[in-house]
Amino acid sequence: MPSPDPGDLTDIAAVEQFLSLPAGNADEALLQNLITAVSAEIATYCERSFMSRTCTEVRNGSGRDVMTLFNSPCTSVSRLTIDGVDVPPAADATSAGYGFDADRIYLRGAPGFGSPFLLGRYVFEPGYQNVAVTYTAGYFTPGQQAAGQSQPSEVAALPADLKMAATELVALRYRQSKRWGDTGFGIGSERVNYFIGDMPAATRLKLDRHRRVVPIEP
Image 1 (tube, rainbow, N blue to C red):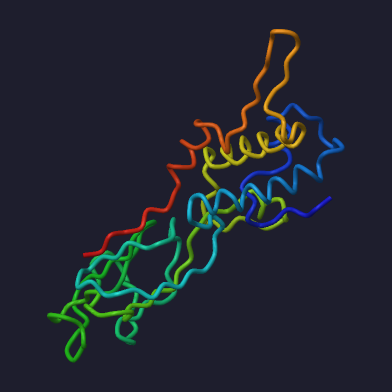
Image 2 (image 1 turned 180 degrees about the vertical axis):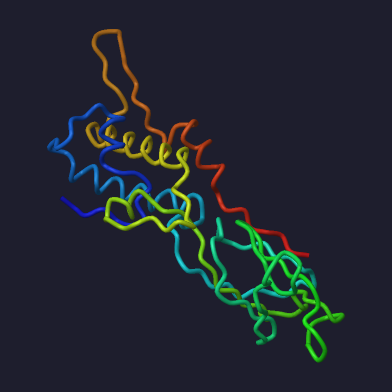
């Protein structure tokens, strides 16, 4: 059977339970392939990767003291530079430097005499491609768990609604694979039509909550 991919958003056990299939059934290799393919499909639809990983962004400075990150949830920041100058992490809630939450990185306080930063305080100084930030963002995925990885304490598990959406979509693709190309069947005057859409509305609703929203910078 194919090995789970770390980026998988659901797992064999969840899909088998959803489909009422017994563990160890003959279609487990197909299910695993569908899980990996559907997880990639969801990442494309949501325009983001969900697995925790290191991200590096090179951005335009806005003149503000806050910047929305492209990937979330952010769990750590390893480096921030503005115009090639390293900005230190803030030692506490009142010290100068950078801080962050799940979605944004903040600048606080004055960098001191001789700094190139605007108005004697930390801001993302206006410029093109002059801000670089390296950080870790994402979730601990079912694929990572299935691959035997340990969940870091600072990284949250994949949200339950996102795992359910992936499970639903895998189940749909599995059912469709059994009747590929068929739109329904009829006996006499009776006809049963199959669902032939890309995904059910309930699944799309779950995924839309996790689609990347590109931040609008002034």
